[in-house]
Length: 73
Image (cartoon, rainbow, N blue to C red; front, side, top):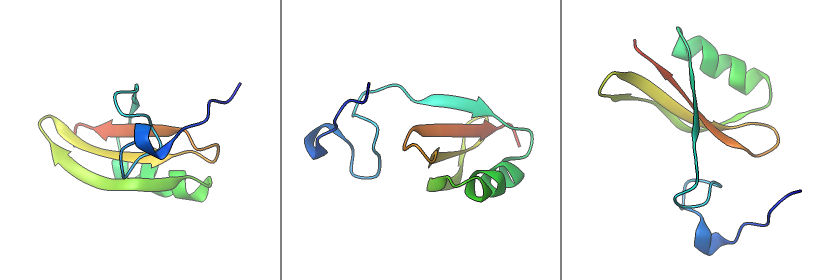
């Protein structure tokens, strides 16, 4: 079952509803993971950025699901 999303319920840079869950995955090598995401047909929504505890990026998979990946390095 696929839920329709209206523009009013999503943030400007994301397809995820405002306040909706964001699944975060861990990677030992964020740059290699980013290359793998793109090679597999994903789209990087937010390039790697620093945050307390490491680095993180956001992407959509080929089905349009938004996910994040973080790394301690």
